[in-house]
Amino acid sequence: MKTDLITIPGVGKDMKEHFIKLGYTNVESLVEANPEEMYEEDRKLCGGSLDRCVLYVYRCAVEYSKTRNKELKWWNFKD
Image 1 (tube, helix red, strand yellow):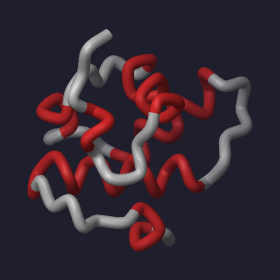
Image 2 (cartoon, rainbow, N blue to C red):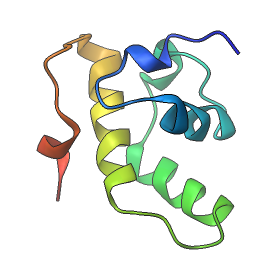
Image 3 (cartoon, rainbow, N blue to C red):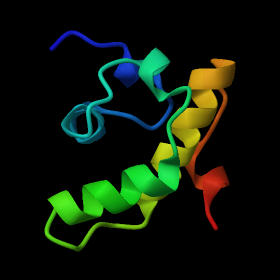
C-alpha cells in the first residue's frame, strides 16, 4: 500500500504496518487519533503484549500529523 506514513519520524516498514492494521492509512488520518487508545487496541491485536515504545511512536506520530515537524523524536514522548 502506498502511504505517507513512513514520512513520520521513527516510523519504518514495521510500524507502518501497525498503523495500517489499526485503520490509519496516511498521516492526515492521525490528526484526531488518540495514541493511548491506538496502543491499547494494537496491544490486543498482538495478543496482549506490546513494547511500550510503540506508544511513544504513536504519540510522536499524532503530534507529527498536526505539526509536520520532521525534527520530532519518538523518545521525547515517553511517560
